[in-house]
Image (cartoon, rainbow, N blue to C red; front, side):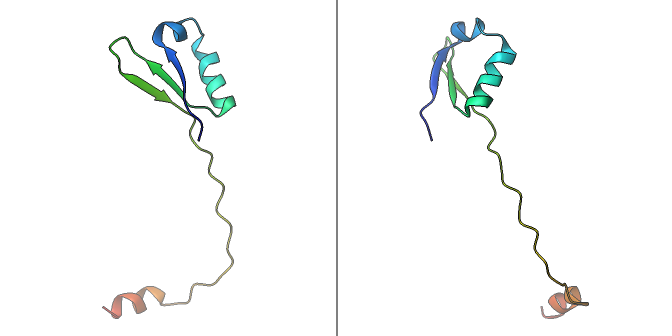
Length: 71
């Protein structure tokens, strides 16, 4: 994980919104925006998840009843 790049609100006002978000997404980076009141907002791309593998198998007939009848 990388350290966030820090901008002030006035600095990002100079960047078109589309360019700002495309830059964050393309660079897979975390950006911190410091607000005038001292609070900070973190912006980062949503992590990409790998697809789950496709598994082969068979579910036996009556599996549900067997589970619930055991209780």
